[in-house]
Amino acid sequence: MADDRGDRMRTAEPQPDRVFEPLPGHPLDVVLDGGWRLAVRSTAPGTAQEELELEPVSGPAVLPGGMQRCAAALEWRSARGLVRRAGELSVRDGRLVLTGPVEAVVMQRRDFARVRCAVRVAVLGPGAPAELGCRTVDLSAGGMLVEDAALLQLGDRVRWTVTIPGEGELEGTGEVVRATPFGHRAVRFMALPDHDDRRLARFVFAQEREGRGTPG
Image 1 (cartoon, rainbow, N blue to C red):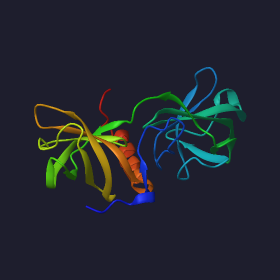
Image 2 (image 1 turned 180 degrees about the vertical axis):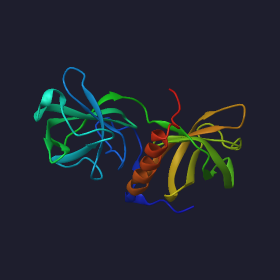
Image 3 (image 1 turned 90 degrees about the horizontal axis):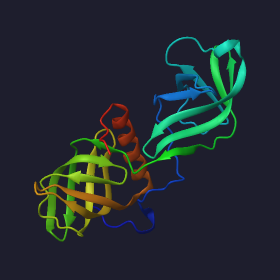
Image 4 (image 1 turned 30 degrees about the horizontal axis):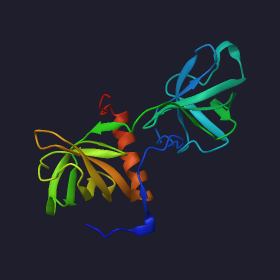
């Protein structure tokens, strides 16, 4: 386990105004007044551009009624809820183009999305003076549920290292906030470096997109 990183660590708490951009290939919807909706994907990573080219998931890039330009919104699901970015939609060279401010708004807020996954985690705390090796039951950008962790007690402050497929090791601190009779322990993340927070969010979003989200 690495030592504390001081100024490089930050508190990992819900940030209602922060909107994570969708991953490349993340499903998006173009929505017009009246309920017309079209599934699209961006041709470039992220959405932080004043002009965003979109291609339909299936079918041609056309607007209803033969329109060439109209007010529209781009919507996508994130770990914070339903996100919407408004702008003007037009048809150009066989592509749909959304122009306008890059600001996006979370329309429906919720706690961090949780996904079911069994990834390796090492935990060090008062109840486990030696590094405790276990696996996650579920994982989110705000915490994790780990199995075979009965040595950890409610309120324990811990350091953890999670090994994420495709992302490597992520490290941070947390607090044990829930215990089950089966030895599971829920750890709320307290601090982790910004770059690790982004890597964890990428993994959670990808797992949620594949249908591994948990209810509630």
